[in-house]
Amino acid sequence: MPIKKNILIISGSTREKSMNVHLIQWIINNYTQTDFTVYKGLTTLPHFNPDLDTSQPPTTVVELRAALKAADGVLICTPEYAMGVPGSLKNLLDWTVSSSDFSQKPVAVITASTSGEKAHESLLGTLRVIEAKIEDAASLVISHIKAKVNNKDEITDEKTRSDVKKVMETFERMLIGE
Image 1 (cartoon, rainbow, N blue to C red):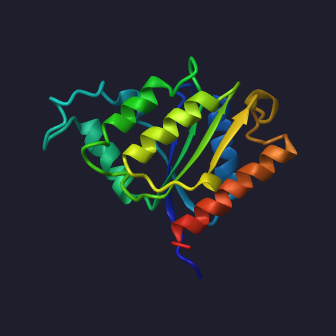
Image 2: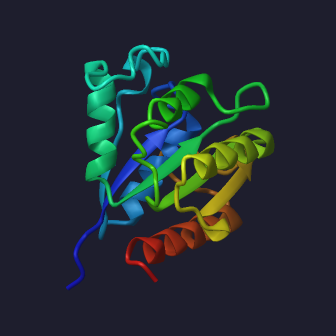
């Protein structure tokens, strides 16, 4: 029997009931052979400050880095804000630059928003700079998310459901090193 992989899920949305949160819940509900941990500290991270990024960073940063180290892989689901990556998500990533916690870590990225393309491109660029292990097939933009996911944690659009499954299949292969 294969060992369950521990996946840290990071939502780029700070809204408690965003479409990305509903999408994340659909993934958790449909991939029961994986252990998921949803990161809840996005809004508690201080603004990135290199002067605080020392051998004793703020407690919330220590907790983030520990969660990343414990994870076999990271799934990021995020909206797009003002044609870019939400500031709180970019802040989280900035806190990981010096720690190399994303270096060679398998990462899947789903940008689900009204459009999403600009944020997705920017997010992938940042993740590549911090050496995350990303494959094109583990990356997806879901435009017009409100027409494809409902508030009952269901993907209502068949093509979107198929696309998310393909992302997760690729991500699972990345996690086992195929």
